Image (tube, rainbow, N blue to C red):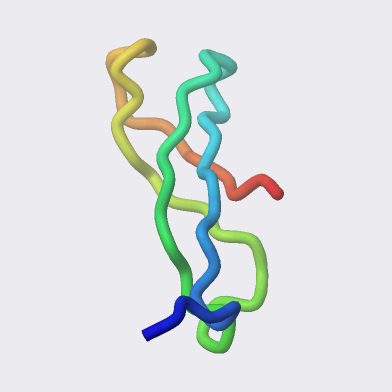
Length: 54
């Protein structure tokens, strides 16, 4: 089964300025805008917002 462009791989970059990033997949049909998730940044040692970058 081939991977399609409906669920592309996106990189979530920390807004704390540490440069830490998570890699995940998203469903373009349900989330057409850029994702913003609140996740743990181990370099800042706290939960911060992570924004999708392209």
